[in-house]
Amino acid sequence: MIAILGATGYVGSHYLSYLRTRGIACEGLSRAELDYADFSTFLGWLKDRRPDFVINAAGYTGKPNVDACELNKAECLFGNAVLPGRIRQACEETKTPWGHVSSGCVFQGRPSDNLGWTEDDQPNFSFRSPPCSFYSGTKALGEEMLRGAANCYVWRLRVPFNHEDSNRNYLTKLLQYDRLLDVENSLSHLDDYVAATFACWEKQIPFGLYNVVNPGAVTTLQVVEWIKEAGLTAKEFSFFESEREFMQEAGRTPRSSCVLDSSKIIDAGVPLRPVEEACRDSLRRMAN
Image (cartoon, rainbow, N blue to C red; front, side, top):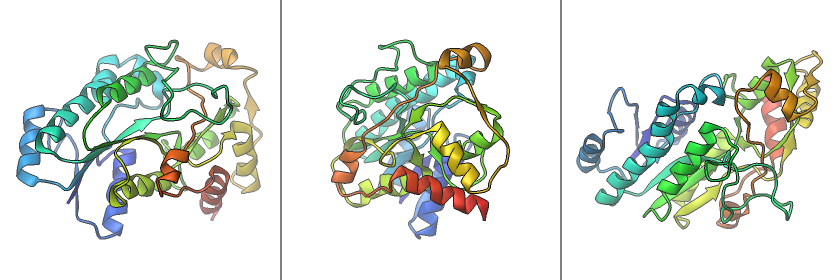
């Protein structure tokens, strides 16, 4: 049986749907059903239920965006840094293998080799390398809490999207705004991400940290052009002249814009579609 923590959330619900569609025995948990944030409660549940694998999709992202994390720092710190450490402790005590949904937002820009940040690179958008958003800082701390963890995957997600209408979907977000910031990013097709991360467990690739993004990178302007080509909107978008202007007029905290290298997971035998193919396919499905 596969256990999913945070199963009512955006990412967790997709894990639950994916596993059920494949007929894989699974149990989705929310904190309303089981307070897995309490170490003793979660440890007792693990000893009683003995899942084959645990997926932690719980965390604090802030709604409607990461600016909310600046106002709810205690909840953000607990959900993104403290909770992973408690789950690690319980899983290691019961020898339960598990995977943790992390984030690529701990980086900014591209590395000097221009290829993308790898799993060996140290985060450069974190509390240890400011300035950063509070959200990014806590996600970097969460990864630190899991450094050297036994039988654990850490999977970095980056700007999730697919064809479904959701205020968490990057493509839906773009359609909701009239003025955008043109930046370059790696993206993760959410369904590709879920399938690829679960494949890590199925294929028994080595435990560790993985960037799980669709290969390549896109700019906001490129995606807007694809949106128009798909016939999803006729409106004209405008763009901020700079990130400084964006921060002065629209943002409360700095945003991470970065390019990650996904070759490690691909070389381990887990394929991912190129990001342009994944984006265009999602937009076609949205238009139909």
